[in-house]
Amino acid sequence: MTKNKNVLEWIEEMKALVQPDKVVWIDGSEEQLKEIRNISLACGEMEALNEEKLPGCLLHRTAINDVARVENKTFICSRKKEDAGPTNNWEDPKEMYAKLRRLFDGVMKGRTMYIIPYCMGPIGSPFSKVGIEITDSTYVVLNMDIMTRVGTDALKQLGDVSNDFVRGLHSKADIDEDNRYIVHFPEDNAIWSVNSGYGGNVLLGKKCFALRIASYQAKNEGWMAEHMLILGLENPQGEIKYVCAAFPSACGKTNLAMLIPPEVFAKKGYKVWTVGDDIAWLRPGPDGRLWAINPENGFFGVAPGTNIKSNPNALASTRKNTIFTNVVHNLDDNTVWWEGLDKNPPKNAVNWKGEKWDCTDGSKGAHPNSRFTAPAINCPCISSEFNNPQGVPISAIVFGGRRAKTAPLVYQARSWEHGVFVGSTMASETTAAAAGAVGVVRRDPMAMLPFCGYHMGDYFQHWLDMGKKLGDKAPKIFNVNWFRTDDEGHFIWPGFGDNLRILNWIIDRCEGKADAVETPIGYEPKPEDINLEGLDISMDTLKGLLNVDISLWKEEVAGIKEFYGKFGDRLPNELKEQLAKLEANLDK
Ligand code: SAT
Ligand code: MN
Image (cartoon, rainbow, N blue to C red; front, top):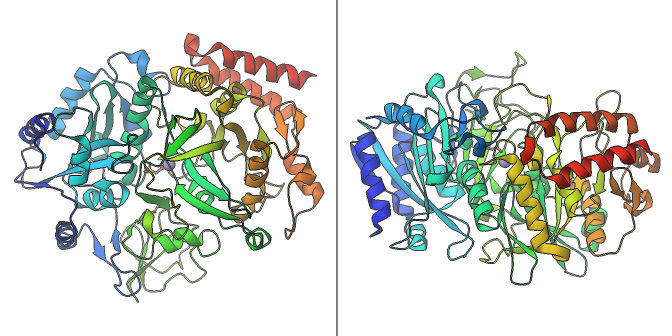
């Protein structure tokens, strides 16, 4: 498959460690993948679904103790502890390697070792990077084939001499929760993951490489690896402006990336094109602007709540060659179902745990973090620039999260530095995407808290440095909150397609076409500048959604101070100044 000695030597070393019965290089060919699909079906790792209704689709159930990322078992093992920073788990790399070697020792005896060469980013793009994942899971092979560009093309991209590839080692081992580790060695370009079979823990190209390792590389190489969707908004004149948006896991990135404009906008000719739904790699281009590629090749989206109304494009993306994980299996027609798909839960079904289920006991059939892995090319609104090796130029960066009260529907940062402050103080109520309590407010800077591969104070500094490099060509920065609730806890803003109304104001601001009002926290739209045509929302409700509650924001300042305290002298002065300014504005 390759003459690259760096690759071959590493493979030999890993082989000696895990001692597989058999070794298979993934070449990316359709014949080989078919064979692996059959192996996966034969060993029960996958079940084939209805060939007519869901051609090429497969169902997988993880172990019931293995359904989400495990942040307490995720480590950044830089040589120095302070380089991992206060927001990551750290252990000395020597000790961690020793511990993991014991867990990997002979772990693939009696199993096949699959070697998956993969490329993050379009083949041939100077922005793309190569990884190799070793795994004993056909689930991983088949998912990686959807999520990345696998096989000989990836090895070609690497070349015969380069040592610049991420070394990923994964074994399901015994899915032993107590010995589950997702470990990153940023200085070695290495990721070792053991005892899990769930998406974000084992598809090493995704969060592990494209965010944790890549964020570290990006800091050293002068670019950015971010937890962001990328979308193109086309106006009636046919001009397309690109926006990146960072929300924590399971806060609607996939829905925003695939938004369908409300009828009044669609009629005028507005369209949204999807470039990516989860990860963006951003670099200053030759024209000085910030350009983005999506390093992934598919969508690993949350299934529950996805339906023909909420996200028809995502649903359409899952109608062929898709892998479903931890959803309901409808035995009547061998299809899948999840809460929020429609109002007709199947009567003859198996739930995500593999138990007979008919919804009458009130339990959920699909796990709240159940997922679909769908090829990007399936998406009806995939951008024509999806495979463009240069990426797309970014006009605006949008931060957001779930906040019941504090954050208004939208506001704009006064400057790049202020925008970095806004991103660094992002907070959101937790979701099912990570193990742990759901609905607790936690600070999640730039939605990167679980994904930043180095000290977060240095990460903030890197953002500030990028702003200096970009100067007046830097994208404008905004914050949105679709999740404000009324006294009964109902969402006030309809969200989904209607978020286009807000995107439109954002683009108008970038183009200098819309005014704004100064508030203590930044620029807000004049309420009349948000187009409410065809929407059952009064001007007063909109004003309420834009309201900045001074006392809540004073509490927010206290929370930020506490959070910032963690970073000690690695917290950039610019951010301290921004915080002081916010405090002063609230006292005015
Ligand atoms: O499990 S993943 O990390 O891949 C998805 C997510 O949590 O955003
Ligand atoms: Mn994500």
